[in-house]
Image (cartoon, rainbow, N blue to C red; front, side):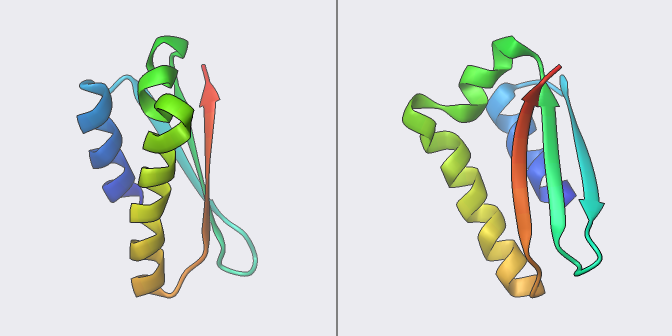
Length: 77
């Protein structure tokens, strides 16, 4: 799932100026945290959150196929 998220974000931002931390809970729930510069936050979130919601929907399909749960968080550096 992390590889898919890295690909999507690098294509949206146009650079590799971000980091992704992946951790798992005891229930197998995946927590993905994207950290990027404040200048890239607007590109990543999009107008009215449409871009980040689309990313979550794509990840939701992958998580459903893998029978996993996940959450996606975005933070500034």
